[in-house]
Length: 121
Image 1 (tube, rainbow, N blue to C red):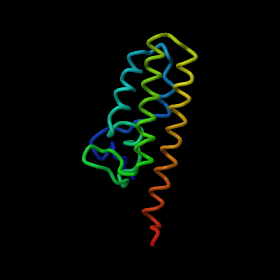
Image 2 (spheres, rainbow, N blue to C red):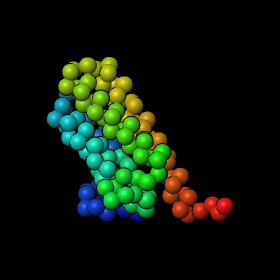
Image 3 (spheres, one colour):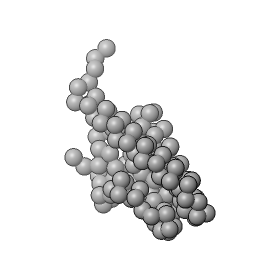
Image 4 (tube, helix red, strand yellow):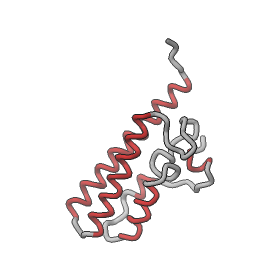
């Protein structure tokens, strides 16, 4: 199954691996923040292309949308902490990003299961 990002011409990307980028690689953290700020390349974009989205790639599911915003914010906070050489804040921000990524994956799995087994009112 293709991710939404791949369906839009992006190469496969591993956010879990990316979030292990050392703090001192500030240009890479800037790139990660930029990627996380775009609905196609953020953590939501690297979920299945079967998830309903708007024309910009934003998930139509409100919970997944909020998780995407939270993920991007955490990656941005990691970039800012790296820029300011603040190890503690960096570690907290990366942990938050990882937690949001986990929640995004869980929500995406739930939405895909809903497609396979729709509920009828």
